[in-house]
Image (cartoon, rainbow, N blue to C red; front, side):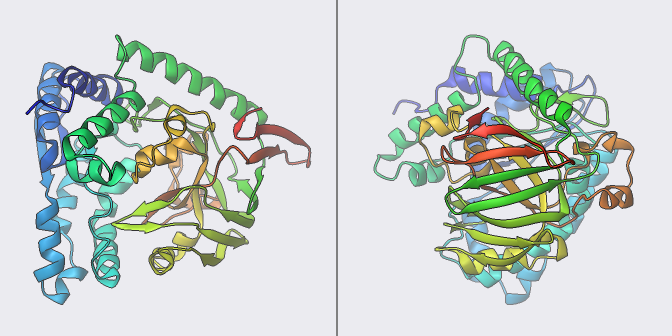
Length: 411
C-alpha cells in the first residue's frame, strides 16, 4: 500500500513547526502532546527539535479507543476527575522555560454518541485542572505552537464518501496547503505571510477603534474593544523573548473585546465542532457584554452547557478578522477542527482573553486586565461569524466610522 501522506511535505511541516512555529531555542526543553496516530509526525518533530538544539523532548500521547473506553466502562465519579498532577507538571515545565507543541488530529466527532452530561462534566474537570498550564500558554509566557496530522478517523469525517486511503491523502494535502508547506521554501513563505498580517495589525492599531460593528444575515452586533487593546496576528513575541507562530495555519488578526460592551445579535456562519459534538446555526443575543439568549439548530444543549461553565463563559475573550478569500475558505472544506475552520472566517471566542492583546500586556496584572475590559474564564472557544455577506465598520470614540471589511474582504 502506498503512503497517502507525502513524506517530503510532512518533513517540511515538522521543520516549519520547530523553526517558525516555535523558533525553538538552544537548550530549551519541549513538551509535546499528540494522538498516537500522529507518531510519524512526532518522530520527525523530535528529530527537528534535537537538531535545533533542544534540551529534552517529552511527548504525551492520547488514543481514541482509550478515550471511548472511559465513557463506556468507567464509574460515574470518574467524570468529575482529571489528571491535575500532569497539568501541574506541565505548568512547572513551562515555568522552567519549556516550549509547548500540540498536534491536533483526533476525530472531532469522537464523543458525539456519548452521554453529553458526562462529556460536559469531564470537560469541566479537565478545564479546571488544566488552568495552571493553560494560563502560561494563553498569556504567552512561553513560545508555543499547534499543528495538525491527518488522522484516518478525522479524514473519513471530512471526506465521508472516499475510501480511507484517499480521504487521508486529500486531508493531508489540505493541511499541507493551509500550512504553507506545499511550496519550495516554506520558511520564506511564512516570513512573507507574517509580514502581510503585521501590516493589517499596524493599520488597525493606528486607527484605535472603540468598537467594531458587524452586519449581515442574522447579524447586527457591536463589539466594544477593551481599553488599551492591541491587534495581533501571525508571529508574536512571547514573554520569554522568543518570536513564535502559535497557530499553523493562521490567517487572522485578532484582539480583545471589552467584556462588558458587546450588544446585539449574531448568527454563526459555519458549524462549531466542540468536544465531539457539532453545534450548528448558533444564534445568540448579547446585552451588556453577556449572552442572554442562545439557540442552535443542532447541539443547543451542548452550547448551553458550555455557556454555564463559569461567569466568563457568556462573555467574549477574542474578536478576529479573516478575509472571506482566505485559502482555507477558498478550499470549501469544512474541517470540523477550529484551528482550520476559524481561519476561513471572521470569528469571536467565548471565554478567556489573551493578555498579549493589550498595550504592554506582559506587564499588566490580572486585575488590571479585568479593569480594562479583559475577560476571564476556564474556556476559550472560537466560532465563526464571517462570510462573503458580512460588512464590518470600525467605530471611533467620537462615533465616526471607517469601513474595515465589505462583503467579507478588507476594505
